[in-house]
Structure formats: structure tokens, C-alpha cells
Image 1 (tube, rainbow, N blue to C red):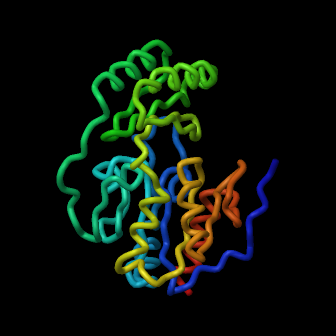
Image 2 (cartoon, rainbow, N blue to C red; image 1 turned 180 degrees about the vertical axis):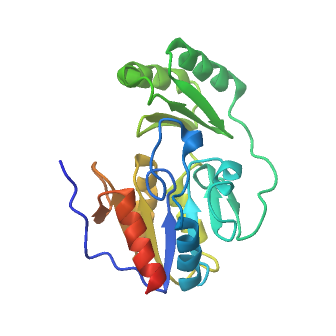
Length: 243
């Protein structure tokens, strides 16, 4: 079913903007390493950040070090589903605890069982990509739930051609709520734009604080607004940057 873009979305200079990366600021690719911003979007993001007094953050499931290579360093960057963060022009420092070794081994075994399936460790979060092997989706999901059962703090979240085994602390909604308690985000209207299930918690958080959320693409969502594509996100941000 085609998605009709929401023409009622209006950003304001007193907003706090939280933007997902993959599938929101940049189009999805079969190989996650090839995902990047289109030409000109870095300048647009910087201009948007200036309009909101620096209260713009890219909030992503990517590891912070990886995310920081793909977006302007002058922005707030929240990586690892909010477990790691860097202020504007701050070089990401420190390390983050890895997932339990037994869990990593179990998921690596699952991944190698299916050609085209790839395990991506992101600190304590473990992503299993199956974009190159879509037929294994159901079997892989059942196997993952069984594999994480012994790890009480872990749950499986299903995204676009990816499953993620996440500890409870890795939560974009909790990250947004925490960010909104301090400068430069505090006192502003939170706006969250994202495309996947990992963004749903942040959608709920933004709306609970009197802001709004925008779902990009198809699929059920708690967000009250929707855009059809990454191109529509770009158009919205370009308009805001130049207004």
C-alpha cells in the first residue's frame, strides 16, 4: 500500500530534533557499510542544527564510532541505541561493554548456519542481518529467541531485514527522555523521525513529552505523522534549513 506523505508536518526553531540514520537520513543498502548521506545533506543537517540552537541529534542503533564517520561531527550523536553519545565536535571516547561471550558465540553459530546472514556486534547489542537471505526470516527469529532465553536482560527486536538482541538499557526512548532533561534539548518540543521498530520507543517518548513523531515508510506505528520515504525526509529538512 502506498504511503501518502503528511503535509501537516512543520518544524520550528524551538524544537529538539532527533533523527534516525539508516532508512531515515540515508537509504537502506544490502551492505550496511555502504550507507551514506547523499551529497549536500551534511550542510542541510548543520543548518538545521543551527536553527534549533544545537538541539539536533542523530539517534541510531549503529555503534557511535561508526555513526560518527557518517554524519557531521558538529552534531550530537547518540549511538548504540543511546548507550553511547558524543557532543558536537567531541571525538567518541572510551569503550562499551561487549555482549556476553556465550551469547556472541551462540549467535555467531546461528549466523554461519545460513549463507548470507551476518552477525554485527555493537557493544552489548548484537545485530543479525539477513537482507541477503530473506527466506530464513522465520526460522532465524525462532532460533534467536531460543538462544537468548538464558540471558534474562536480553530481548529480540525485529527490524527491517535485521534482528537485534538488545539489553534493556539499549533503548532509544530512554535516550530521548534523558536528553530532554538537559541543555540544549531541555524546554523544547521533541520531534523524533525514524523508520523502524527500534524507533517506536522514541516515538512514544517524544509524544509523551508533548512533541510529535514521524514514521518514515510503511508499517504499523505509534507515531501520529508519516512520510513516505527518505527523499521526503530530505525535503522536509531542506525546507526547514532554508526557511
